[in-house]
Length: 262
Image (tube, rainbow, N blue to C red; front, side, top):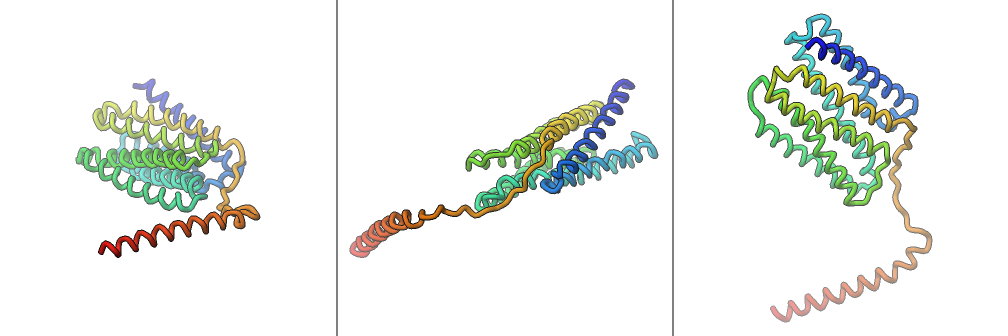
């Protein structure tokens, strides 16, 4: 147990180092302006660890007060991560306004269904209430990301390598959290130390993916209205008029036949 605790402290230091590296890289490459919600999420997680560490030094690692603070602030972290995911989805799909209107409504409906399902199948006792809520939100994030990739594939929207890597990092970490929280619910206290260790390792791997993704400065997404080239209207107008005339004749014949039958 002592070896695991020492390893966890070492990995915690590595985790803070990678968070700081990602934060500095976002500022240095000026990607904080391209991904403001993702930048805010990284900043929040960077400040989250020293906050908890100070509370551990004051009240001890096994203090119920620290546990309550940790779970409360964890809810804020997950909310910030959900906003960062929504930001990337909008960055990719928002260029196409019609697709984005359909996508965000689909995301909201699906998120609501997944949260209700997670609540319905959860064990409703006070010990696992926060754990179930955490798992439900992580499952919702993973489901929305799956839908995001489906929309991008369905409408043949090219994903930038950076956007793809950031979303994949969010997806893998959320999937791990869902599995990890499920095992923690079964072996609540016996598994707690190992759960913390695996969660730290998973987040370190996610940070490496994100650091690799934001190494280069990204371009802002600009919504533009696609205009037809010069002369296209003159070529297309007769074709469109002919099709409208044929459609009008078919409809006229249809309604005349219907009137005679009546």
